[in-house]
Image (cartoon, rainbow, N blue to C red; front, top):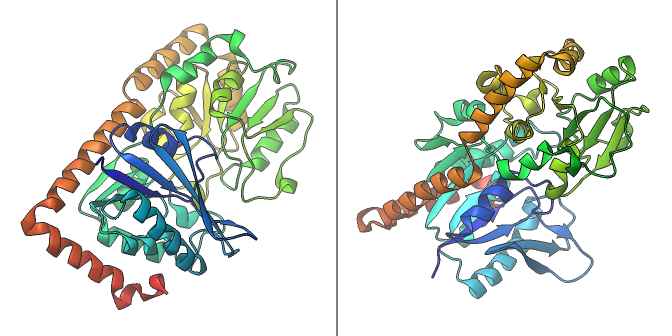
Length: 395
């Protein structure tokens, strides 16, 4: 039987199409993927909804009577019951466990995993409304994990001394998909009536976005249009700046994103510099590059260090001046930056990243299957899972 990946995620598959969807839809050519989401409250019976949005990818959505958020302790008994049924139907007892959220770690007790992977795509403990147990559960996850992947070099530096097998896999790009933006005829019809120039952003709009800066830019440059494409999360709608030249298009499908960029003059990475953005490595940096539009970013470390020669990086105070530079750069400078973008995009792909990860996962599985290591290794991990130091995790 094909090896299974049991993935525990704080992100829903139907949310913004990002790292988990890119990787797991590709890893599904090698493994059976079961993507276990956070529970959804229901007035009905406890149940597990399963759908297959991509070949060999099974999205599992628990519906429980509890209103506790995410993988809260109050949810664990019901989730264990649902997992037992899923295991019995699909033979998942010896799956590779793949964690995006350390909060789901108590559910590892339902398995005798072939390997344990922590794909650390963000420093979740720094996010708004992060669960108080998150850091403790991450510490416990790092003790039992066989592999740790990080979503960028900043996270790699933060985790590399906390585990013996940490591997940096920055987010990549599907260049063919975003190259659709190179043809202006592909522009999204809902945007065509906006005046130019247009300085756009796509992605989640939350506490990581410098909304006061956007408001100030829109006020001081009423001739600029700011199309913002993406869902609002964790912040109230009342926090959004409202001006005639700021346009909110809401969450859109992955297929629509290059169509919006096809009508933009500049792509923005308008991140606030705060604890929530200290370790981020924006997936959209390379996606913007594949569209070959000028890019302006605040001084996010994982943008400045690898791409400071391509992206115009500025403080919030000088962000407007950088946007003016992007709009008025000479044809020669624009061509030089486009060449650098093409080179950066050509050097990576989600296919390559997923393949490299799979090789490491398969090697970890093989190591654990060696007779002299398999049982002692798992006994040691079960001891960690049940130890008093982790007692709060398993209540």
